[in-house]
Image (tube, rainbow, N blue to C red; front, side, top):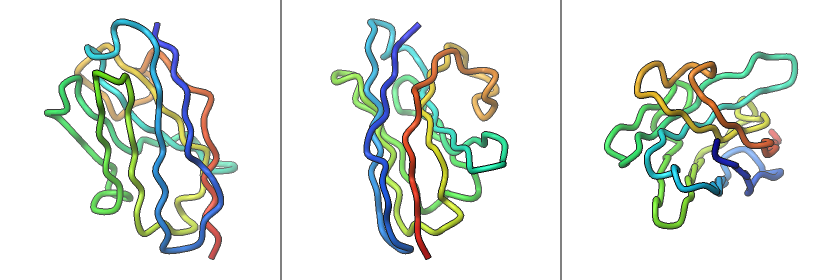
Length: 124
């Protein structure tokens, strides 16, 4: 398994931007699909976005498409989530995750490794 550590969360106001980073350790990072999920209080964990091993395949949840951008740097072992036009509905703990498979990457059960999460709070 790969170890994942998220950073970059914080408290911002509506309309602001944040950039989350996920640092991965392990030799297999460049072969893994990487995803971001989030979990708001009293809600289930939900899919945000994923990126394929080479960055060629990217998919976003409808709720964030057009506002969030995922990218990766295989040489550095990092995945970045740029979040723009944030609103209170984006408040959640954001998790970085790694998947060995190339199907069902919008589902949490297809991810093998998870970070500890980083809190994003957007005030209105």
